[in-house]
Image (cartoon, rainbow, N blue to C red; front, side):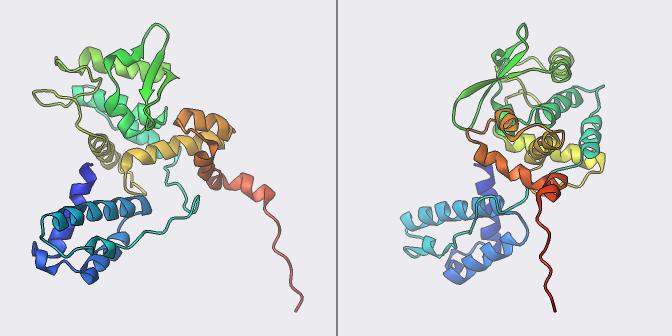
Length: 272
């Protein structure tokens, strides 16, 4: 993954490119410092990258055997965190920040709408092929994390944005990928990181602060949160987000504070 290289580069900077400084103390301090600057998922990604890197160094005889065991395990309790999301007004400002007079602006708006209206993952968008869209039936097919292909209804707004991009934004190219880069040779995006970069750039244009790392995923959280507050059930939200079980979707119930307040038990009074 592209994010693995970022963690490895940061580690090398931490030890000043001196592999002799790789020891349990420095590794643990690096993970601790990193965890203070980013969320749980990013920290877990970092520790995975470090273990892979250390095992490579061990195989090459460039560091002590079993040094990978010094990487601490990041504790994670199911549903312990709150999803980071944006208010609907901020989401609209991000979408409106795209310059529709430019090919890049048309492409970026179509991408933002797939994230903010349909709750797609960044990786889903990278994998969309031209043939995945059924214009006559108004469907779009997505191959999710489990490699299962799922069809979603293509809304008028999203469909029009994609058509605008195809007619006046997408450059001539041999690739079958729906979205491509804006510079020759106009290749498909290499991975999901390109989508997050597009979203982060749109957030900066709109003057919206991203509440966590992974700008694209914040929009996915935002659409799920908005749906819940509009009264849509968790079962229906799970279908939209492509969750195989409702257990994964239950985390969004914690952001519906008005409903939670209705079922919250009063704090017991203690007699002095």
